[in-house]
Image (tube, rainbow, N blue to C red):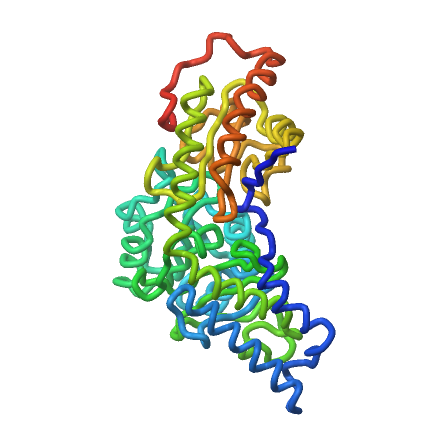
Length: 398
């Protein structure tokens, strides 16, 4: 049976080269990197070489990389670590309303400890307007966190302008770049970023490894206490196999990025155009151009997104509805609500994320099967064909 895996935002396959690189660290090079004897020192050197590769992918220095267990942990360390370290200076945070749950819930947790958070609205495309951020900043603001690109709608935020506002005012700026690292070029110095979260699972490394970039001037309070691993910023014996795998995957991603971007953009544009042409009453979400190159997201009227994903899977097509951390919450996506999508329409969300391993043949297969699946689901719907407010096919309703 033909098929197409278009859910790379939630999980990517581990590259063959990555798998070959990490296997020895389970059975042969198993020494603890904190040990001073030779085999421990060798493992330490290998981990540091991987750190350099991850740093190079985002234009950072190796000593500015902290390895974590995931992008979510990196977000927690960034938000809470800065807040605890700077609480004598201020207690106010600014985050966008379309952040990943690990950012939103970290901010809400801090509110229980007498911190205050401003949740910035976004426009119909999901953009945070720089002028709105500037107005939200107070004398007691210590941290701003704006996602680089949402996994649900794909819009790439104007990070350079947003971070520049914070730099002018001496405020720490963090971005969650889990969805964009390895998909689009990022240089933390050119973008004025102080903290950046990334995940190995998004670039072909194993699950269970992530990283936080932090500019040298930034003070971070550790969340995990114990030994002096990661220069005292995250205790615990290192996941050496994961670190080595992340390093190898980062090296490959950096090499492939120039031609991969154009390839996946071509596939994305064909998928978007084909769906809009063949499926009536579908709303594309996110910005039509300023978006991740391999990201296509829609809301289909009068169907349930989970039912759509289930039926597509029966045809060997794998996509998602909402973010990987929210798709089972059975609630309207806060991201879609933030960009003005009606609650009933938001229930029919679907997200397709394309990688360099996908082919045009797979995209054509999706375009062959998807219209019939949507039509079948709508035939069961009690609201299909009813008097529902009209909206443009190609624009997110306000």
